[in-house]
Length: 439
Ligand code: 5AD
Ligand code: SF4
Image (cartoon, rainbow, N blue to C red; front, side, top):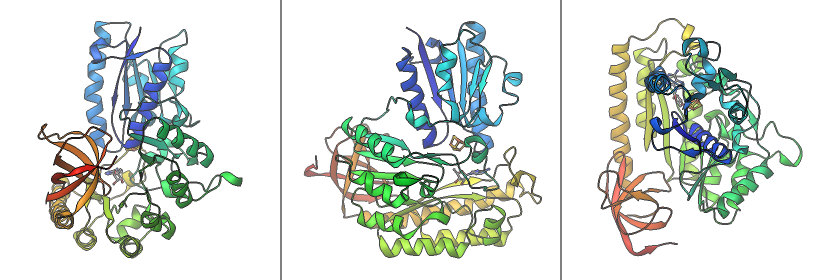
């Protein structure tokens, strides 16, 4: 039996795509190898969002080159966003790569593997949904659901519209059927995935055309689904009906990841985000009004071309004012083919690093303060497994998406009640209540 080894980089959409690649390979009769040196097929599902992502992956690719030089019959495959973004040059620059495919043609990997010529083939069209391939899920209690592919935004820093193509939504009936299958198969939490989830459905027609808020209700109605998450929404499409769903639709979790990117309207304009600082803060106010306890997290870029000290202070101010429960912060990284890569007034690295440190201070301080509201409360926790820092304890997540480390006895996928006794900026700690098992 042939064996594959797959390494995944990047976002949750890539984790989803990798589960589908594995499902497809196993339906072709492949099994998973524990290590690269035991694999007949060495695969990478790549990311290209920042330069660092490229660098990390290239180091791994060197290992595949070595494996190929030692065992000539090994097949090396590279899929995902990096592959798509270097499609013109991939075989010239990396001659030991046998097959390369973008996120829109994962299914072509099967065609390649069953063809006669196992060498230098590339597949880079945007067609079909990875979500229609069979899946090998990593966690029985959790399922990814790809609700759309591609992105119609033109954020000037972002490589994704070029790696994942125009936005196409999957029909709502197909999604509900998929969630029903997942629930029957043990999933109690689903995460709806799209580059811009809340513009879902606008390209559909007839009875299939439903809004994102309606889709949340349809998924909630599926028996056995206790938690619904989604990522990522765009602030420009964050309508009141979606916000209200967090209060009114029982499975929709009390957490919204709302990417800010910058707190300065002139920078947002150059980023082509199509909202202003005021409009963003207005969305936050609406969230606080309808779902007061909602956790809000975000993504922020520092050092975008032309960002002045004044612009940056505006970002600090928004971070201070919103009081995020957590944030991913990034130093701007110019990406090939994007508009921002051509903009003047690059911010020197030392300045960007210094701004980043100031931002992280505010984010962490506010997150720590925010987290104190959980101390003394009992939260519903979905158990993931042993704690990473202390294997005698357990780890899980609250509905607010906070990692909770706690003492108790329960298996992955169980819902337990945990009394929260401590909170840092990143994690909560506590003890499972007696007779805590909710199910
Ligand atoms: N440089 C730095 N960060 C970026 N992101 C996207 N493109 C870039 C870039 N060129 C960040 C954004 C996005 C997150 C997934 O990655 O904050 O929301
Ligand atoms: Fe990386 Fe973005 Fe592609 Fe996800 S969509 S793999 S984050 S480049």
